[in-house]
Amino acid sequence: MAERVATASRISDLLRAPVGAVDLTAYDPSATVGFAGDKAAGRAAAAELGPQLADRQECLYANGTAGDPRRVLLVLQGMDTSGKSGTIHHVIGQVQPLGCSIAAFKAPTEEELANHFLWRVRKRVPGPGILGVFDRSHYEDVLVVRVHELVPLDTVEGRYEEINQFEAELADAGTRIIKVFLHISPEEQKKRLLERLDDPTKHWKYNPRDLDERAGWTQYQEAYELAIARCNSGAAPWFIVPADRKWYRNWAVAKLLLEQLMDMNLSWPPADFDVAAERARLLGTG
Ligand code: AMP
Ligand code: MG
Image (cartoon, rainbow, N blue to C red; front, side, top):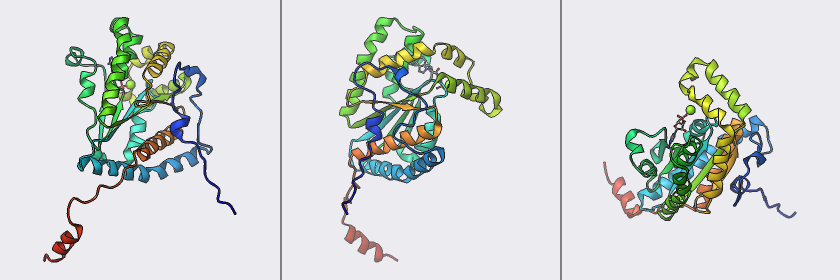
């Protein structure tokens, strides 16, 4: 009997943002693109990815210690409650923390505002062998800044090209960039904000300003469409991840990250010492 070759589509292809104009209203935030099962199956599938992710991340780290310049940068963007920190918890939480660097970008400090918008970001880019994660990023400087007109529109308009140059520079230095837009619906956000209000252990996550941001939902979606369309090179691609279902979001980001790590074709660095000689030396000790 002829062997059947699995031809399952790659999540990296299924979730890749299109080249050219982006219309986010055409994407269903509650979709489960590339996954046929239910919540329980999704959770099980995500858990199965954990050891594989941990293995590839450790191999990346090992190569970093051996002088390989390669590293990974996972950029997480999305509206409030879209699951940026939940993704870090569930996906990145499955790998060795030593090889990770996680940076959250909040409203800039006075010192940060006095500098170029990429100044604070450059300080947090991952080094060789590191899996870097950005919880928000330099994209805020063309998102919240654009929606609230925090700087003149001309300045914002120039930033897309600055971002492209910055990301090309990172890619040239050996960074595999994976940009994820966690796409939620306004209905799901309402539900999640309510949960935060109704649970005293979640009050710290709530900010009354979140409601002002929510009021600008459409402008934010438009700002995201522009950012994704204008900064979507092959070296720094965007992925649109439906994020209304947390279990799907966790599975999809884990799968995406694993595929990207696999694409790096990492192998364990060979010993830079004589293994047999070291073994004999060790056995000869007391
Ligand atoms: P959170 O991620 O919920 O802790 O909120 C961080 C807040 O910082 C969000 O409201 C962001 O929009 C805001 N923020 C992040 N980066 C910038 C920036 N460059 N300029 C203005 N606000 C920013
Ligand atoms: Mg918040």
